[in-house]
Amino acid sequence: MAERGPYAKGVAKREEILTVALEHFARRGYDRASVREIARESGLSQAGLLHHFSSKQELFLEVIRRRDDRDGDPVHHRHLHSVDHLISAVEHNVEEPGLVRLFVTMSAESVDESSVARSFFESRYDWLRGELRADIQSRQDAGEVPAELDADDLASLMVAAADGLQLQWLLQPDQVDMPSRLKTLWRLMTQGDDTEHPPA
Image (cartoon, rainbow, N blue to C red; front, side):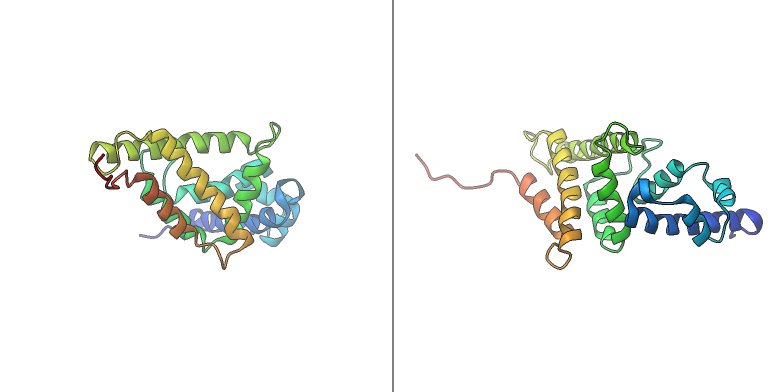
């Protein structure tokens, strides 16, 4: 049964705020985005918005967590992510250019030690590499991926490729097919050396 009453209204309002905030953060970045303007466009006072999100930082982190919430649970470190999920997430991201733009912008800014997003991205990369490494190791145990390949290296390369392809796609969306290129990379990295060598 669907939720009704104040709770359902509260959830709906939070989603509305997050949608508006995404556009502001994606367009202006974290520092220039205005909580007052986000509240106004959400039909709230600034105090009303802060009833749902206690600070600008919490609002920002909730916006970028949306992306990972679809495919896994970095907060509780459940082993739900995999190479297939990563590729599916990239496929879904094609439909959300605003979220991709925000993610790329803020992940770059997170290298600054004073960035509010630094701890989030550090935790995200630790979590994501660990999830992919576990998935790759299980594939190695099943004989699907060559055992001599380092699972941690493969995991890190897949994450790097996924994030790098997003930047290329934002710049040239008509020329860069993110999911296809990520699948190609995975196939090239894991097909092993099956080339027939001529006898000596």
